[in-house]
Every structure is written in structure tokens, then in C-alpha cells.
Length: 433
Length: 143
Image 1 (cartoon, rainbow over the protein chains, first blue to last red):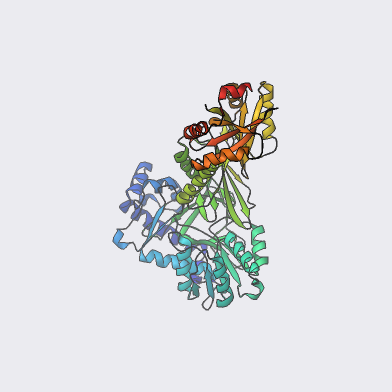
Image 2: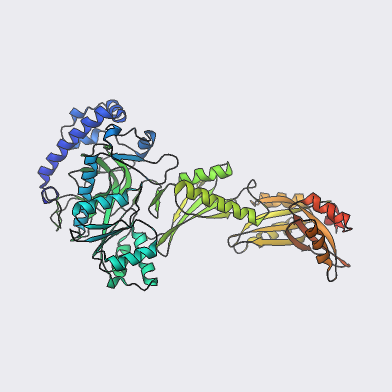
């Protein structure tokens, strides 16, 4: 089902004309209101008026996560705070999360795009949406929520956690659409099984899963265990939140990017060169309708490719393939973004020296687990086991408090962590994604 | 009157203990007493050897995290109730035993126990007051 037939099936030529007009407007807007962008454009010797074609976008410098951190908290906002009605922040960055803002119109745009996304997964007015994305600073919960209301569906704002209660709600309220992270979904499936509740008897027809990478194998497992169509959704708070792109239920082959609001590019992450359709590289986004937090050529670090082939569903918007990896070392663990450098800074505070450590990520019982191995030096070594265990617990608690992710800490012997070319191998990801 | 013990951090995996004993054997160091405290993923190996300085050096050179710890070597009557009498003395003085293990001695009517206390000095004082024999480190390594 298509929520906005006019825009979602617009012929490419007309779509690109709209994109150009909107791009020119947003560039003038950020040049006038955000000192960061003014300086960036001035330094690059390009004025908003110089952008005459969509290709001219390539002359504008990229924006990175570090730029957002440097402008923490509100330096990238393009409207006065009086016009900002909502603030979200990304999870788990040491000290400086990425803060984004929305005007009332931005919230409305986001709701429209999430309504489109829900429709694309087969939802409509009359459906009951079990929304198990977290509500809070994370964009997942509220993003889906506003889209569901816009669509006119009934939304259950159940948020994350309290899995047994979720199963009871699924059994009693008979929701028809599930929205959650894929790993939590499998966890829900197991809890239901333990409670003697079969998904065959539930009423779900589709589930919308995102906020962490998942594979085709996982899709098959979810579809088999939960007896529903599993749809992949993509989004990030820097660009908007969930609803930047989504698969259609008809094809389930690539995620349509809502191109009347976002311009995607694929670049070579090493050179910054823009790559043609079909070639894998780093996904870059420019938002062309956002008011409070427009972002220009934002490097997502997500690796994918774009597919311009017409789709059976009738949408003319380009499709991105499933994200296959990252061009940096960020890991997503139970929906939380984790950089090894953040763990390192926690360890440094404990140890006061450069720690040798290794992060091991596994997926056990469908939940991600993080094990942090830390080599123990003489300074921290105690002869007493209980003190060493206290040390493990302290590190684990500090990681939880700083990053919001649970980790099992294992002390290791010096030099026991494999070093390649003098540098330790920091991350071992055993998850089959 | 204190004695010195070598503590070594070892991961709980096959062959690590023999790595340590191999290093000591090669250096001609004799192990006099040994205890292992373990958890699911690591252990602490505690050793009394005849040459602490050398043992520490060779183990550190092999990349182990090593630490010297102060312990107390106590002579215990080798008959029923011998250890109990000493523990009673400590209990009455409210001194906590962190851990203890036996020292190997070939003959005699006394056994030697190695103790680690939370208050080492006080423990020695109380034991001596109650007529218990405390063996000092230099004597221990010649036994």
C-alpha cells in the first residue's frame, strides 16, 4: 500500500526537479543560519547560489559525526530554540552525544514518512501496532509512534523491556504489526514460547525491524518463528530517525529512500569520490526539507549500494540494499552504538594507563553479548581473588553507566591479546549478521 | 617475622600452570608450597619458593603479572586440633584469614601453614603472645 501516491510514485524527472529546488532552499537556509555551514561553504569557495544542478552537490564538503560533536549541543540547529519542539540524542557517545532538534513541521514530516513506511509494510488504519522500540532520547519509539497515529492506526506504546508483559499484551490486545529491533524480536519469540504462547495463534501480519544490522538468514528465522512478513527499516537520528528508507512488502528487496526529502549518495570512503549506482560504498545523506536540523552530505559510515531499477510496488524512489557493514569501527550492540574508543576511555580511567583490551561480540539466545577482555598489569593485580572480581565488576559497571550497554569483563594475562603489526585486534564480532 | 610469597595471575586455560612450573624448573627454582585460587576465567597462583627474587625475575621476563605478597608462616602441631587452636586464637582477636595453605615438610611433629591476614602485623603479635611459633622468611627458604 502506498501512503502518498503523488510523491512516492513521482516520475524521476519531476522528482529530481523537486529535489534540486529543495536542495537550493536548504543550502541558502543553512548558509544564513548555521555558522558551521557558512564557514564550510566559504572555505570550499562555493555559495548556495552556485548549486545549479543536483550534481553540483558533489562540490560541497561532507559533514561528519565529529562535526556534530564539535557543535554540541545545539550548534548545528538552523532555527531559534523557540521554534524547536522536540530534542532527541543519539545513544552512547562518551560525554558528547549527537543532539538533534525538530520544528513542529519537522515532526509532521517525520510522521508522514513513518506513515509511508508503515504503509509500505502493509499497515493501514485499523491495524494495531505493537511498538517495542524504546521511547525516550532514542528516536525509534516516538518516531514509529507519530507515524502510526498519522496513519490512523492504533499504537500500543509498549517500548522496550518487560518481555513477559509484552507477550501478554500481544496475546490479549491482538496487535497486527510489530515494530522492534530484530534481536529483541527473537528474544520476544523465545519468551512467548516459554510462556506457551504460539505466534501462530497471534494476529501479526508484518513486523518492521531496524536500528541494528540483520541478515537475510535472520529474516527467514524471524518469519518462520513469528509467522509474519519481516520488513527492514532504516534511519538514523542525524538524518531524522526511523523512516529514512524502508522495504516494500511486495518486493522485500532493498529499502526505498524517501527521495523527496533526502538525497542519498554513495562514496568511496577513502577518497570521498561519488560512486555510480550499484557500486558499494559509504552512504551519504543530505536532508532537503528539514528545518531545525538540516544536514548536508552527512557521512553515515554505513556501507551499502543504491539500486535505481523500477520496483514492482510502483514506487519510483531509489532503493538501498541492506547495510552490509561500517566504514568505521562502530558496533551496534542491542541497538546501542558502541565505539571501541569509548570502552578504551572507561578502561583508561580505571587503569590510568593505555589498556590492552579486546571486545568480543556474540549473539547468544538471540541477544547480543559483549565481553571485554582486559590485560591485567602489575598495578591492578591483587593477590586476592575477591579484589580482582571487584575490579571486573567495577569496569563492567563503569561501562554500563557510560555507554548504556552491559558487558562481561574478563581479566587476561599480559600479552595474551593477539597483536597484529604491533596493534591489538580490538574487535572480534562472532555474530552471524 | 613475615614471609614472602609470589602471586601470579593466570588465565583459566589448559597448560598455563605447567608453563609456570616449566619456567621455574628451567631456572632451578624449587617450589616449597603452592596454592591456586580460581574463578571461572582466571586464577591466582601463590607460591613459596627457595629463591623469590629469581622466581619473580624469570616469571616477569616470560610476561607474567607477578606480585610479592606478605604472608605469615606458622608452625602447627601435627595432631588433631592443632590447626583449630591457632584459628581460635585468631578468631578471639578478630583477625580475618584471607586464605591459607599448607607448606610441604618431609618430617617432624609440626606442620607449617601459610596464612594471609587482613592485618599481618597484629596477627604476628597475637600469635607470638600465645606462644605460637612463627617462621620467618629466611628460615622458611632454608627448610
